[in-house]
Length: 427
Image (cartoon, rainbow, N blue to C red; front, side, top):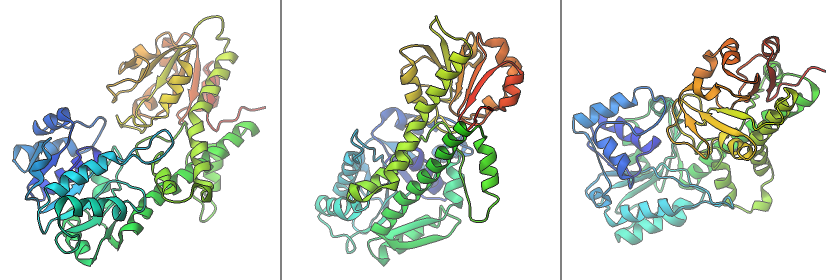
């Protein structure tokens, strides 16, 4: 298993549980040491994974190393490394290329190579296949098998997603698909679909681009509702009573490793001029954190917060409920936009590394003396706090709700100034 992040570690543990001897390779020594000790390096709630990791490590079925030469002799190699974007929204494939070179230099004849990483369409044929052949001196299809089986998991439910979601295997040839199915049938209890490599690449990037477009539509409706004095969440419920409608939840922004990136992977493979809808959706969703900031500034002005430097509490740095994954978190642009004119403190029960503002896991500390509480993530702990508790801690009663956690009328009855995404103020 090359890459021991959210995807690679989960696959490694499940294959080891099924009786295979698994070697995990990662260039992060701290992560390798944690896994070797049977401790999960992942932050947040991952039901079943810490216990499974401890079990398979203690039984000797999963080991971890930062030495890629130990790949030699493996019957199958799974590639689970990041494919980030640069500032121009172009894919950065250096980690993938480095991993594939390491695999090629140590590849055994007859092995299967499966790339789980999400990649721009054309990468398997244009980079992975020729690099493996050049480094190994062997021919794909004759001397080793090659597939692209893009992951379909989310932090917080890795093992559940891996077991229950249907998968797509894009193979170089039928023999490669058959070899891959032997391994994926140990992981997946749902249907496994067969296709070619480029179709698998397009499928993964398109499915996340589709979700991004759906969220952008919900966010644009939410912005309209704010102007019209309506509740976007009530509108969503009513829209979805019509057949074949599936309006998503609006919110403070789209985070995580996949959805902010994967649409651009698809766009990068074709002429940008031919892509209109996907970049527009990305722009809408990228703008939601800054819209949240504008709501906060307006709410503080209505509450009379002026003449002093306010204390602003950001609630949620992890991008997803129950997760400590802060990659592309909507909280980051919110923090950046407020830091120059406010004392910002960030609370998250799962994230242990901050951004540019102080970070605490103590909710009382975060809210004490605060002039504005901005809810960016809907962690369960935020659903449990009461308005009475918040009123007793805060200096100024201002709630800015990016995740529909509060009822606007209840907040106003409790003497809070309330603003929320998609929550139009009554005229």
